[in-house]
Length: 311
Ligand SMILES: NC(=O)c1ccc[n+]([C@@H]2O[C@H](COP(=O)([O-])OP(=O)(O)OC[C@H]3O[C@@H](n4cnc5c(N)ncnc54)[C@H](OP(=O)(O)O)[C@@H]3O)[C@@H](O)[C@H]2O)c1
Image 1 (cartoon, rainbow, N blue to C red):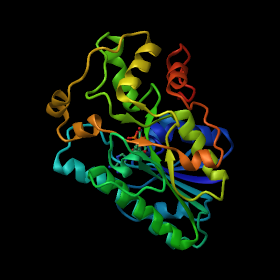
Image 2: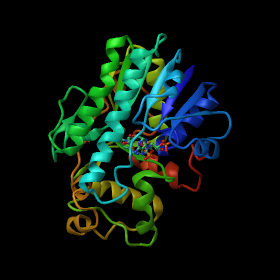
Image 3: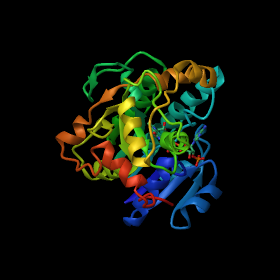
Image 4: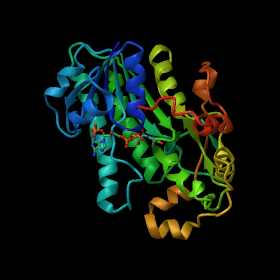
């Protein structure tokens, strides 16, 4: 297949593009930094410059392509949430997705499938509800962001393109994402759960995220929202105990919410609450999870072998 990817230089995109390229697909990455594509992914992959804000000659790369995969967006947890940063988090996702849907609408030979990232934050947070793809959105900042982001992607449905919105949970791999930030205190024997500890963590091994994307590409009957989480959701306390066991370290020093609020402002509320999300579409359609349970996912990452998708 010919596949156009945005955000292909990121934590998820690097692993995805390397795997798709190894499987024989031809990959074009839309990027703000073409040099990074060459540096990180090598010469097998074509880089085309865009800025995620404006139409331009990059639209030609969508002409006649088979699939578009949209992973672009300003990092969510890279710093304190100021008003400007929150706006950038929203705009870099919603505007980029609108641009892509618009470019798809204008292509004379349109992609058959448009896969666009979203997050489990779509559902809002809850201490006791279990959410699947049939549930509606929550009513906080993340839920509003995911609803607008998905709405922008779904616009491409009007042009006979199959659209999938991936409601992604916390992606696990030791070379990036939340896990790379959590590991150092554990290694230094000062690891522990973010309070209250009872909040749900819906997670996915990066191998299964890449696997699920390849799987939805091939399964033409699947469209709409897909929860990209493992079946074995856990509480924060269980997550940290399992991480401690995988690293052979204790999980004992709780991280209090007030300290997080001092450091991260409003972003802290995202870390002290959560949601239990079920991958109903993936399970009902028979996706074979390689890491359905956290214990095996973390052991695969910390049992002495390198990341399976390390680049
Ligand atoms: N990682 C997770 O745990 C997780 C969980 C839920 C949802 N997601 C979503 O999945 C997507 C991929 O996640 P990731 O962890 O791979 O993200 P990432 O490592 O932060 O990479 C995102 C990519 O988006 C592009 N980008 C960054 N800021 C941008 C901006 N202001 N305007 C346009 N493009 C910009 C960059 O590509 P260039 O520099 O090449 O342009 C970057 O490589 C994101 O949308 C994220 O919100 C991730």
